[in-house]
Length: 124
Ligand SMILES: [Zn+2]
Image (cartoon, rainbow, N blue to C red; front, side):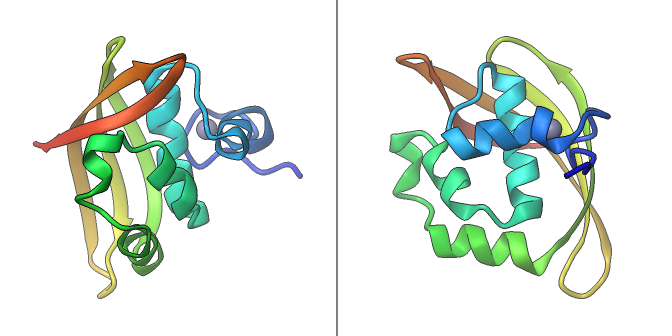
């Protein structure tokens, strides 16, 4: 499969986000953020749920994640800034009505026993 990764890395998906999604782990906060975006494009709600920190999982459900992933058409990801534990990005998508939308967020991540988790996001 020669499919360019949806996360915008210019790499093939099999050499970028896909291995992280298959193993439920990513090596850095930015890699996790990028692979979570890719997971949205693939409707991989399991991955999105499993990589959300335990404390946050009670505020979300796999069904909601899946509905959100499916109802939008994911166009493009732009990573604007990343540090060891935060990533600021813009995700471009078409909503269920076909309106173009930009989701601008600063996400915070944390590492627990060698695995990275999404903690929370602040909309910008
Ligand atoms: Zn990727």
